[in-house]
Length: 454
Image (tube, rainbow, N blue to C red; front, side):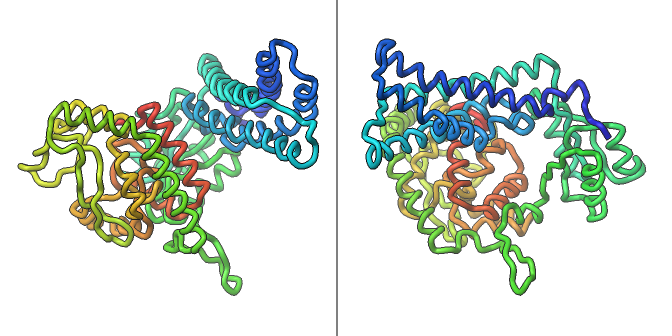
């Protein structure tokens, strides 16, 4: 079946990403040479100019590779400007600096004549970050004005599927158009429904589907050239990027061995120590300002200590800035926080919106009770309640809890605990240093855009 509808041609056309790549090449040339001419008043030293000219292919290749790695050519899954603005910052850092590092090494060991200016490198970095963010925001705006939309349909069964369809309807980006839902039953075979609705992608909720229906959806989409994006049930989420190996030719997947290799634990711990120490030092003015705001508004203690569950279910005292009244739970006992919680003070709302209230937990990270990235630690009372409803909830305890995690950067504050658990299970199945760095970068984006604030 040919799928080239007017509504989605802009998002699907292979040439669109190619055109962005060509523009990136031109922008890279401008970012490399413009700061040089500005730095030297229009007359750069010949050795600087020759170095940049000779090494420009290397500088360009690093930028294109970084742009690809951070999804700057993916306009089907990254449909919001914020994704590209912060992805562009990361692509600028990892695309600009390695190229100059190569030149520096060559200059140091092989070719002393190779020269470049640190001021030019900084200007190059800033221009590329600005270009990536502005160009992708402009591209998304152009697609929106043209009426281009990614038609996303859902397939599934039961309450989980209805919740997915409602979530897509209420919270999908402007460039996404809901394109109907399919459930097994008297409505007809999936292939017939797919031919009639012609969506670009199908979001499949696997929790309520039988194996035969999952097969039906996948084979029909394969035949029609339609992508399938899986919204996994909790059991399937366990397999997200899990460690695959074989034993005597038998394919196996390790589910509960997250971070069991000694070198993985050591690298993660060193990253936690370095990140927490640097964070406490660099953010000390913010911490002081937050402490002053809490004390001036309501008096009482600045810090708030609460028992949470750590690795293996061991309890520890989590520390954070107090964002509620001193007697917030005096009459009610333990109660889950909610959006627009009346117990939250004015200063507390600012602390929560900016996530500054969580920063004292860097001390928990230094103590080894938490990690920078992992499932958020839960109070024992609520963990016991959640575990009764979903026994897999305890699987979160096979790793240290984190200051941030997948659920915090992709979910919302009012997201159901089962939905957050999916994110936690996917993270545990695919723990890696690279995944942690991406989550930390996404957390910075969420903080700066107040995404998921409560």
